Image (cartoon, rainbow, N blue to C red; front, top):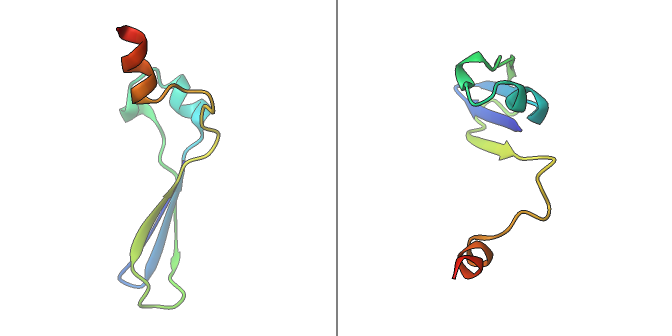
Length: 70
C-alpha cells in the first residue's frame, strides 16, 4: 500500500508492504511507517492518493458471500 499526500508545500509518502502487515499479526502499532517527505511540485498541490497493490484477485464479493450463506 502506498499513501501519498500533498499539503503545505510538502509531499509525504508512506509505503507499507503486504508482507510486513501480515507479519504484524493484527498489531498495527508494531508496523513501521517509513515517511518520505519532499517538496511538492507544484508548491500548491493538495490531496491524498492511496494505491493498493497485490490484492487477492479471487476474493468473494459481499453479494457472493451472502448468497452462499443461504
